[in-house]
Image (tube, rainbow, N blue to C red):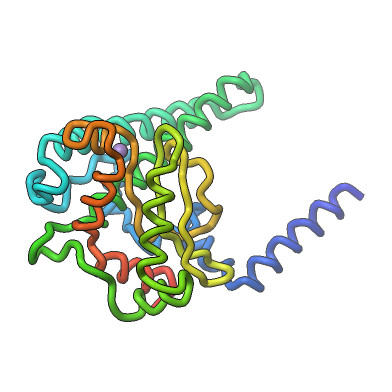
Length: 254
Ligand code: MN3
C-alpha cells in the first residue's frame, strides 16, 4: 500500500515534470535546474580528476570596472570571499562523501548539508556575478537591453524603467546580506525579480538566474560604505546586457 502510494507520487511528479517540459531540462542540469545551461563545468572551475572546484579567474582585470566598482574591492571580493565559497563547497562535498552510511549523526549531516547549500550558492552566484558585468564606456557594460531580452522585460514588467525600479528596490531592501536577481520563471516563462538572503534562501526553486547583484557589504563597503543605493546605481552602469541576453537564450533552449 505504502509502496503503491510512493510509486503513484513518483509517477505524478514525473508526469508533472514532463507536462512542464522540464524532465529533460532537470536531468541535463544534474540536479541544479536552471544553472547548467548558463555555466559550463569549465566556467565553474570543476576539476573532474580531483573531484573538486578550482576558483575560476575573473573574466577581466580587477580594475576593469573602475570607477564604478573599484579594483581593491574586486581583488578582495574575488580572491578572498569567492575563494572562500569554493573552499567551503569542496570541504562540504568531501565531508558528505565521508559521512555516507546509516550511523551518521543526523545533526552532523544537517550541518554539512547546510554548508553545501550555502557555499555552492556562493560559488555559483559569484561566477554568474562576475560575468554579468563588463567595463562601462565602450567595454560592453551598461546601457539598456535590446532584442528579445528587452521584449521579455517589457512584457513582464510593463517597461524597462519599471523593471529597474523593482530590481533596485529588491537590492536595497534585502535584509542584511544577500542578492537581487532577475530570473526567468520557467513554468510561466515570465521574467521576475526575486530577492535572495545569504547565498541561497528565498530564490524561486527552478528559476533561472539571468542577472544578479551582490549586496553583501563586502561587495561595496570599501568604496560606498553604507550607501547601498549608490553602489546599486553604479552596478547598473556595468551590467553586461549581452551576457544576460545569452543566458535568456540558453534558458529558453534557443
Ligand atoms: Mn560576494
